[in-house]
Length: 261
Image (cartoon, rainbow, N blue to C red; front, side, top):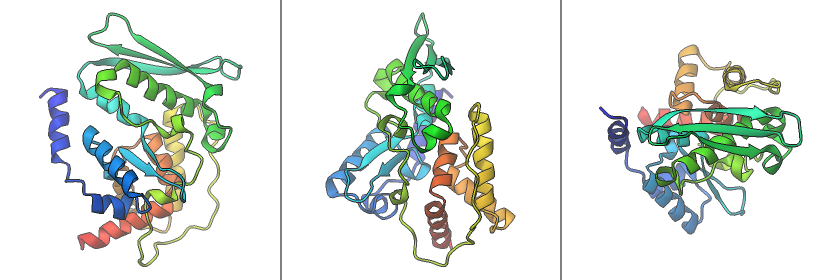
């Protein structure tokens, strides 16, 4: 089966996305206009918020941001059947012109597509940009590079949080808290990430921190919780969201577990 056909089958198998569910579980403080926009973008591009493919972010009464994870661009480009490999790296690290470079190869292009993103244009000097600047910069390059290399297929998709500089605010509104018995609470402080070299190290570091927060869970429950939040698609971006929104993710998981019973 061709990659594109497989993607279409998987997309059709997703449950119908209702405005009521999105309002209740994803965007409880959305205005009617914001909810309409979010629903139509999600449906138009086949993005499922319950798979963490698209996020609604709103703080208080500020205008909402509709964002996607950088891995969405990679998945969609791969689904076209035209992607022939890609790589991203950092050049001039620590210098004024520090930048992330991405090279994307398409089967129907004679030459690879190359795109550069300069750190000084996106670095907010806060939170994740201080902890893992190289990784953050690469994510911007990935999103922009794939959008430009696949304009017909990816043009119009929402931007990533790194491009919009919304990653530093706590995403408490992404999932409302369910009213039920609390899960085990961990009061110990989780250490901040060190200066990590690549995504593999970042993923392992985030796993350790999430695992530390789940010490009150039984082994089987811990695995079920982890799989529920990540949808068995473990990426650094998704784990970072999990860690930053642990309480909300926990409550949403428990609510889903009660509904199944």
